[in-house]
Amino acid sequence: MSKFTLSNVECLDTAKSTHPISTGIGFLDHMIDQLNSHAQVGVAVTVGKAGEETNGSQDKHSYEVVNRYADEDQADIMSNVGSAIGVELGKLQFPGGEGETRTSRFCCPLDEALVECTLTKPGCGESEGNLETFTLAPYGIYPANKGRSKIGQMQTRHVETFFAALAKASGLGITLVKIRGDNGHHVIESAFKAFSRALRNLLDGTNTNEYATPEFNEMWGVESQSFTSSLELCREGKLERSTKETSILVHVVFDGLTTRQANRATVDTGIKTMDQFVSLLGEEALISIEAKCTGDLYVDDHHTSEDVSIALGQVLNTAFGTKAGLNRMWCAVESFGDAEVEVTMDLSNRPCLTHNLSLSSNKNGEEYAGDLSIEMLDHVLESLVMNSRSTVHIVERKAGKNVFESAMATAKAYGKALRLCSSVDPRRAGKTASSKGTLSV
Image (cartoon, rainbow, N blue to C red; front, side, top):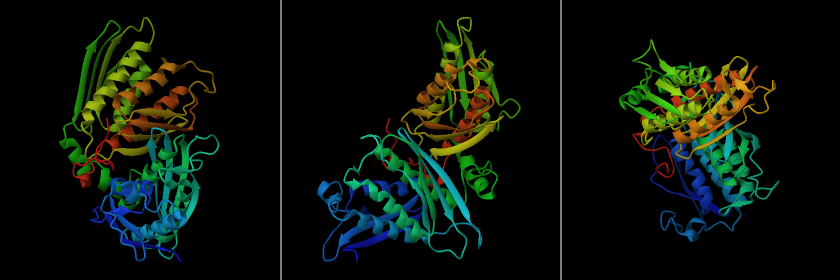
């Protein structure tokens, strides 16, 4: 029998709890708090001991109070906390008819980690869930082949204990798979955020890459409150500049393509591959893009492609504004020819690009993607991500017949992810989707 007691355990859908998260392990508190920010589920739990007076709301920043049980049996604490939260999550109202199994998948991009979470809510008749797959360890690469055993005062080996208990008590099937991750802190944070986002989608009846369902259209479609609220922001960005190398104009309008249906994008950079890349991105993002560049193509494609992508990233960042109230994260899979690419995006203000596109190692030994040099395609992606101040992970799920196909699949997936990230979530009431309350610059 556990010597710990749990009180004030709550999981409130789209509501905030008046009670704290106080488990006695500071880093665990921080991770559970991701459900508040990213699942929009008000979570509370206080851990104590029989006969011991513990008020977790007092001195919440005191090291001694926050980590009061760090030297105790963490397996016991994390199992009990996971189970208690799981019980409360199991009480929430999930959409779907009797006997209907629902699935939700989400990947969370951090600058040094990418974790995939898949949740399955079985139909009636099954009450006990299961942690079906868990492959997060090692937690980082320091030390090599071992990773971190402790982050803050939390023992990393018990992250699996927490999710196993939560899955069993909630009735959910859970898989957590590390796709990439060199930083132990970020691996665990990505896991909790991916779980939280997948949970939110499961509660909404939506799923990434399922765009034709009634639930998706109600939440994010062109007739949704989100779409209307997004248009009401009247977001746009414009940049004009001339140097000895290029003269450039880039103008983006987040208009849902409602005002320029006949001419969705006016793109003329002098590089056909760039023109198609930018046009496809805008079409999938439902934004109007005007991009014109006269550059020194008589030298090579470097200055033109670089300046267009820098400018596009900058005007997108201008159009985003403070990003308060936006959905912020999404992952999207798109195809072009034989290529299939997934882009996972976070409007994080922490710019980072990680990808595994077959560029230098492409099977045909190509030097160009259409009329754009492949080394500049890599630079275009880097410049776009850095200047839009986003975190982006690109996963090439299937290589195309050539690099051009992979580039166009990337443009489409990038645009689709951008559309959902930049959409207003009316439930956030203009507040930032972050446990910090702001996106650090």
